[in-house]
Every structure is written in structure tokens, then in C-alpha cells.
Length: 100
Image (tube, rainbow, N blue to C red):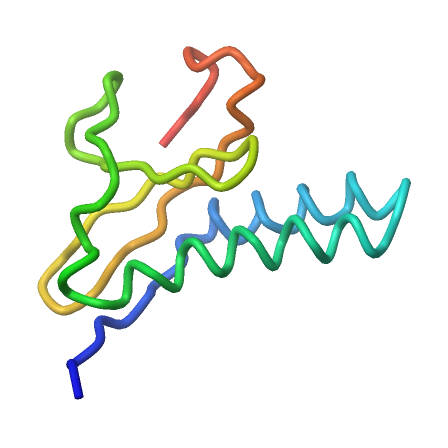
């Protein structure tokens, strides 16, 4: 069985998830749950060492990689035996507003 990496969520990323859920739950709890589930499924792929580099380098900060889940960019970087989830950003927003 393959060793897995620990997923660590920054406070900013946790807040992003919360904000996404809160926004969509105003319209539909099911839709909010579905969006969060898809983001979590995408992040869970990163725990396997062979997948830690599946994301592209971010053009604004090459320290980070990103994967896409629906309309969301999930910014992360591998550190030792961990994956740090830094931010979750709605790709429909202005990328210059993204603060890591």
C-alpha cells in the first residue's frame, strides 16, 4: 500500500471553504455540499505522492501549484511529507486579487 501525505489546511483555505459553502447555501444546501465535496475530492488526490505534482505552477507565484475543481483554483505546495493547501480561489474573479 502506498504511503500517503498529510493534507494541511491553512486558516485562509479553511476560511475560503467556509465562505464558498455559506454563499452557495443561501441558494441550495445540496449545491453547497456538492461544490465542497468536489473540492475535497480534488484535494484528496494530492495525498498520494505520485499526484503531488499534478497541478500547474501558478503564473503569479511559482512557489505554489494549483489544481482546478469546477470554478475553483486550489493553491497548494508540497512540504516534506505534507501537502499545504494555501487558498481556494474562484477562477471567475480577478487573479490579481488573489492573496496567498
